[in-house]
Amino acid sequence: MPAVDVDRQAIERRDFPVSRRGYEPAAVDAHLRGLASEFEELQRSAPGGETSLASTAGAQVQSIIEAAETAAAEIESQALEHARSVREAADRDAERTREQAVERARAHTSAVEEATAALLARVQSMDSEVGKLVEGLRAGAGRLAGDLGALERSMGELYDAAAGREPAAAESSSPAPPPPAPDSA
Image (tube, rainbow, N blue to C red; front, side):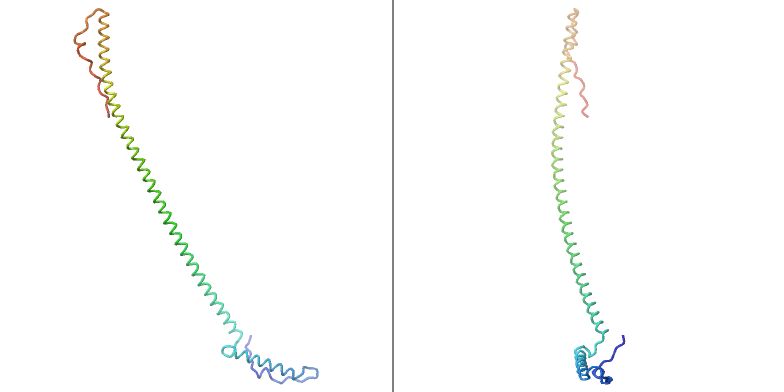
């Protein structure tokens, strides 16, 4: 749209043709004077004296762009702050979870140490009892061997007496040797 130069003279010009059935010339002149005054007032209130539609639109677009840039900067700032707070909360949660895991591991290790100590004490006690049992079995086996030797001699003497023979002197005076000790390996 081409720019139109408009001033008070162009609005108030009086070169309209006069006709019989037209508007009253005095009313038309008054209207044109009022319109010219309003136009001058608009031109005086506008910066630079003259305002075109393009410059008004440009100013409005500029203010819209500035508002959008401000809003975008605010949104970005809020997003960065939110991301920072989420990251800090995640770091706190991770640290708390790590501390809880370490504490559970320590408690579990302590329980395992206690159980191990109890098992070792029990194994040592059992080893001692087994050693005593082996010694008791050895002693019992030695007595049993001696008793079996004496029983065998007595049976031999009874057999000889029943058969009418004299017991052998060497056999009756020496006890039977004890059986060999079992290997404790």
